[in-house]
Length: 264
Ligand SMILES: NC(=O)c1ccc[n+]([C@@H]2O[C@H](COP(=O)([O-])OP(=O)(O)OC[C@H]3O[C@@H](n4cnc5c(N)ncnc54)[C@H](OP(=O)(O)O)[C@@H]3O)[C@@H](O)[C@H]2O)c1
Image 1 (cartoon, rainbow, N blue to C red):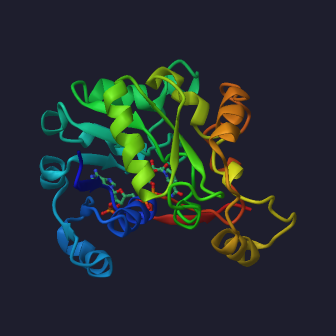
Image 2 (cartoon, helix red, strand yellow):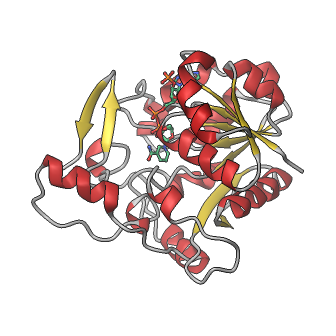
C-alpha cells in the first residue's frame, strides 16, 4: 500500500523516522527548507533507498507524506499537491518557537485540526508527535516483541489511520487510535502520554552537561497499548505545562530562531 515515505522536514524527528523507514525496507525522500544539497550527508548515511528533493517534489512522489517541520511553518506547505494524500503530522505547537495562535492557547482547537484546515483535501493523521527523537529510535521493536511500545494516532479518516498504523507497525510500533483530530489534544505537549511516558524519571538538580548526557543516553520505557489508552484517558486539556519548552524533559535541546536552549 505504501513503498515511498516522503519527509517534509528532515530535522531531529524527520531524520530519525527516515532511518527507521529505511531499516524497515522502505524508500525515503527527504526534504527541508534549504534544498536537497543540504541533505547530502543524511542521504549518504541512509543509503541507496534514500534521496533528497525539494519539499514539493517529495510531496508529489511519496505514498505517505510525513510533515515534520515547526508548526509555525505549516502554511507554506503545498496544499494542491497534498490534496487527496495521507499526511502524517508529527508537529507540536510551541508558542515560544511558533507564531502565537490564540485559538490554540485557549484550547479551542488542536494544531492538527489547523493543519487539516490548511490542507483541506488531505487526510491528516497525527502520529509520532509524542515521543522524542532519541527514544523514537531506541524504543522501536519488531511486531510481537514483549517490550514493543505503542503510539497514539488521531485522524478524521479511518482508512488513512489504518495506513498510518501499518506504517508505524513497519517501523517498530503498535498504534492506538485515540479518535479524530478534535481529540488529538490528548497527545499534545503537557499531556501524560507526551514524551515523559517513554522516559525514566530524570534525576533532580542536573547541570546542563549532565542533563544533555542524561537525555541522550536515557533508556526508553516501554509503553504498551493498554498504557497509552490509560494515559490518554487521564489527559486534562490545557494543563499547566502545555506548550512551553520548560515542560520538556531535562536535557532536551530546543532551538528558537537558531539559538539552542537546553531544558533543565
Ligand atoms: N525533536 C523531537 O524530539 C520531536 C518529537 C516529536 C515531535 N516533534 C515535532 O516535530 C516537528 C519537527 O521537529 P524537529 O525537532 O525535527 O525539528 P528540527 O530538528 O528543527 O527540524 C525541522 C525541519 O523542518 C524543516 N523545515 C522548516 N521549515 C520548513 C519549510 N517551510 N519547508 C520544508 N521544511 C522546513 C527544517 O529544514 P531546514 O533545517 O532546512 O530549515 C528541518 O529539516 C516539530 O513540530 C516538533 O514540535 C519533535
